[in-house]
Image (tube, rainbow, N blue to C red):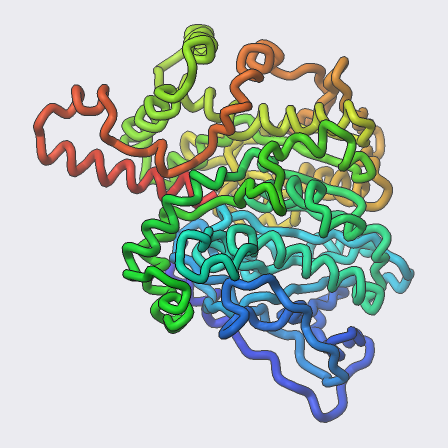
Length: 555
């Protein structure tokens, strides 16, 4: 990202003020918590920075969101709300926008040329490994999508991430009063969806036809929302891009972050943390952002087996469109600084993940590796493409379809123009939003024709529950045919994609292999053997693995 881009993002910040004089009623929406006046660009009106909850500060820090109070005040809706607290990172453009605890805001786009009522509503939840991201990212600007699809109302939602959104405080004195802290970001998303139900008709949207969609952590979020009882009835459809219920942690995995937080802050009780200023929290976050948690399978909000609700039919009333990209892991080649650190670091993770597997599962991995061609680094890359992304999505789709839920699956193969990235993680985002000038993942501007097709597929699904478009018929996914839309330069249906990999590796899904920092410990036998006693090499290894940890946890 260039300095000019960073400056442009920072300079876009402003504070929405109360309006006491006249305003354009065509650019206003009367909601329960105020009248919000947006800004027009072309045929699209954008309403930015609308609060859906009280600021989670002071006594509300690390507490479940509280709905925004009712109000008759008229306010500007010109500027995005602040990004949640996070560490600046080049591919997370919202991380360069002003940050703060007060981050629970959403944006709405509507097309002024289409005055029909009860429009389909699409609510987007951003990615960022549950530790980064925000609505200010220009990738998620809704103008192009809503301009081309005038009957769609688009909403993008901010939620707490990292230290403020996903931390288990139960190990601290007084932590028992903060039982929601491990999954606050998800509760924020649910509160935003409640606001949508209550207010979206003021923008022309249909609260009975809401689709939630997201990528990476956003894909994980929209996969988890159907299994959470508090979210029932708040949406009708789900589009999960490169994310599934597998992007979660056990309570034990979440403990490491808490220990590091206590050690870094010297806190032993909640009063110690509650007494910290926002600036102090941001400073601590810079040291801990590397170790962020994913949502916790706590048995309260999220089942210990998050696939179970899909398997037993609890989610069957929700339509599901889910998929992954062919080369998800190649994204991290760029994130960690190139092929050399990647080539070293991925075997470290692989070694640690293999150490905990029982012999019969190690045998399956060995068989998989023997069937793959090329350098061992690429074999491991293919393994993680399957275990962290594609196969969890297949398992989720299979369970949903088996229990009667309408299910559609895709497999993205269109490559990035960036070196070695191929069809990497996040490469589809520019296509989905029609923001082809955002080349941070695509390298070169995306193909406009394909982007138009993808937007049509996504919006058709939001309208009717069937993504088919024109002559492109997208068949329902079922356990027998396993029909999958391959999104290539010429989209088409295929059946039981990569079935040999599925049959071989499916049993390993019970291990919930994910980007936990613990698997990036560099002190494994083959590494010690490789580096011997060289201090210089050891230092380099440590740095490479830490970079990898940060990058893998980034998305």
